[in-house]
Image: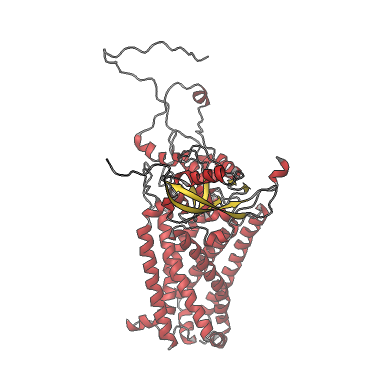
Length: 123
Length: 148
Length: 284
């Protein structure tokens, strides 16, 4: 059933996010601890660091993967919450469609950014 | 019968029923916190897509956004996002396990005092909460170190 | 002799009942009314309500029947949890104040009487009866359906449901969602899915896996906590989710409905056992 398929993707994207966002959070927020272990950048938000990462294939691909997974997971969760508010069938259909369209649009935009920065010259 | 039917009093707990509603076990509040943290992360994430999207315009655009977000208020906001992620991720692991039928036991013959799924997964729940707390402390320590 | 055993009518303590009152013909809003009730040994909340009706306020209304925790009529919100009034002794509440309100998530008809139509509608939507393709056998049975002890254990726990509605009152999703099927009906749909005699898996799947089915459950676990018969609806719902996943990925087969057992063969009774008398009622 369609609802079952959506839920399986919700779980799958959750696992993907656990790995990729865990990595992302590690780089961004655990830099002090990583420094103690001798790895990781000093300040991951410095533009030199940001562009250094953005121009590595590994990060470009994982950014796009994480973007897609997080968009699906988050918007499905939002849809789930909204579906539990006793809305009419038409409104529910509309919300489902809106989440799909918004998710797809944001995914296209984010992927474009990831690829464009990957190819950016002179940084 | 007809006119009296219209005087039925609505008694749904409504949205408050997500947050509280009685002396229920900790899992019912863990569910509310999971939703709250999820919404918080989603809100931050949608903004994050656009902020990081400024990279296409080069390092200057990026630097100006970072300068805008360098005030302590935003730094605390970032910490909150990390805390929300720590809780949501670790509780999410528990939910994946439980919703696939692990640690909730098998059906049998109920005999009083009843053993039921919520009780049976309690050890997992405790482990998960401790893990979340540890992650939050680590994140808080890093934040503190960064703010110094 | 054996010491002073307390007589049933000895008053152990006095408690204050705070009962939500609502008369649709007079009141616009419900209000809490207080009664001082003497508690005797073994007195349940239901006994307390009866005492109030007999001695203090004849207008107090509620539903009750068996007074022994099997009919499911007296579900109420007592001291912070949905409970059966007959199943809870006042002294076991460990409080001098007993707050009694009608079951949440159901409309109030009057005082402590909830409108349980939504519960029964959702229960009906789970088609809580055996569905089989062999209608001839269903209408004119020739034998038993085979079922092993293990197959029985897979669903018998969920068959203990007394339709009291406490789980629906406890569920946070039912609190906001009028369309959510709810722990009671989902558990019954699962009970029949797991019953090997049942052949209605597609009909049950429509209830279980719709957009207001098991996936709107997020394991708050409150339903299992309050169930007075240990049915554990939360377990049924999580098992249903797992089942959908395993079947979708071919890791579990769709089972066939169990066949009808033919007449018993190769059986000779012991000589001492007398033969059964001829039936006095014959099937037309």
